[in-house]
Length: 126
Image (cartoon, rainbow, N blue to C red):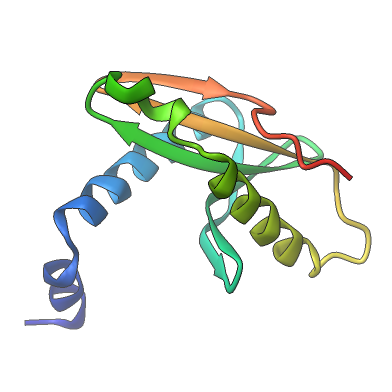
């Protein structure tokens, strides 16, 4: 058994489902002209599923998957607390730039086979 096999076996069903949703979102965004910069960026304050480049803009993407629209669906699951953690992670990521590029926060909401792309879905303030 290789290291990758052991890693895959250690993943929970929820993590595997999340990985698959991120794969779908990544391919969807690439088909719409975006280029991947980073995936699963983590820091002490939060995590960003996908970081993409769209022309001159850096796009921080939260991917949410839900089987049904019960309880508000995928988009509604991006709570104020989650938004705050995304903003913190983005601020940490942007520290690597002398002059940070223009940025926005998008949400990819997946419900069954449907993908909704909510552009500029989160306001960072500032």
